[in-house]
Length: 131
Image (cartoon, helix red, strand yellow):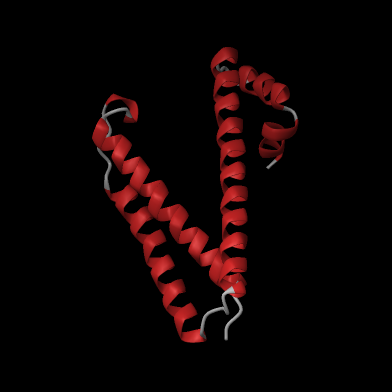
């Protein structure tokens, strides 16, 4: 648990700890930078998704909202999109050339598309006023 906090609050200390356990200091530092960048990008993506969901919910509410039945359908479809994205990504284990081939790029794009659209819809459906 302490190491997780060090990752974000004191990364140089985490590099020192890794080096004391026999890991290469430069490799540990590079890995920590990559992990921190990944979390920063994820936080920014989630923030933008939340902003989009709030905007979509506001627009739908301004147009009169949705019935409870329609909200159920929206939530079901959005849940299915999220499940599709996750299951399709997990079931495809072949990776060549570090994810840089055209099929891998398309797979990653579709995963992000389905997952983000599903998440925006799901979050917006929580904020939409049932009519």
